[in-house]
Image (tube, rainbow, N blue to C red):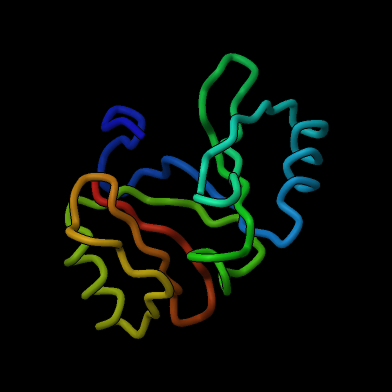
Length: 127
């Protein structure tokens, strides 16, 4: 994902859906919405980057395995943040739960999955 596509802090820039039957769900959205897809290699399997007819990446359809095991089967929107470490600290301070930590050093593109205390999930990613 490019800096330009991520927008400014607070903006929504993408969404992912993590499910057990990703290929069938991918095909459902291709038929219903008109998206195309490209494979996104995840080691021994591929998740799917969903693309508009004009070639713009808009969402991901992911298998609920590996690093995605345990994520809820619902659309998770991703918000851009200026400082991921600070945002995660604020999440915890306000009673939120961090379900997926960023991997390695936090840089542009690093992300986490969090849950609001009342149960809403979202992703946050450093711009």
